[in-house]
Length: 192
Image (cartoon, rainbow, N blue to C red; front, side):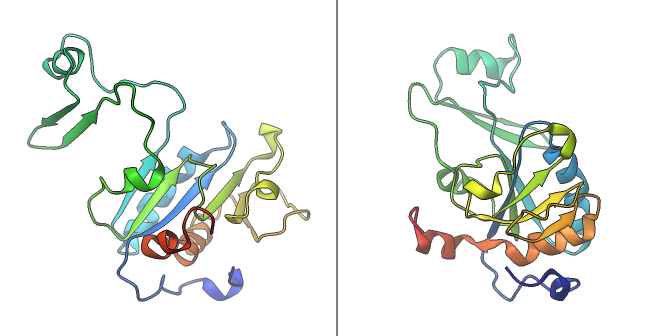
């Protein structure tokens, strides 16, 4: 990782390739809260971005009684819902294995940056979110893909740079510098 003192204000490089980086941390560490602050900060820097969130449990975006729910419950593999403001595609796995991160990324429209929440066991660059009150150990010691930690306390034991959890601009700097082009990540392969 580059020296954090050198990256403030630098661009994220010259590549137009889709870049990916994640936020990883224990439940309650504030990943979603941090993302809600980072997204506008990155958009203000001219970045077009998408997010990809992993849910650990079965979830349902649809409501019983709605036409789309009836279509899916009747056995449709995919249901696409569209309106003047948004569209959504729901895919039912129907006993198929859960897709991995790379398979899911193929469904996103082209953007500059994809911020991933979760998927902490997959191999791609991540910033760990650490909050002392959660009382959990660092993930960084068990994950070589953690490139920095955003924390609300000093972490002298960390072997990667630590930034203040409340310094949104510095965290945005780290995200932009450490996000990896997807084609480079693919070249490294799952064993990289």
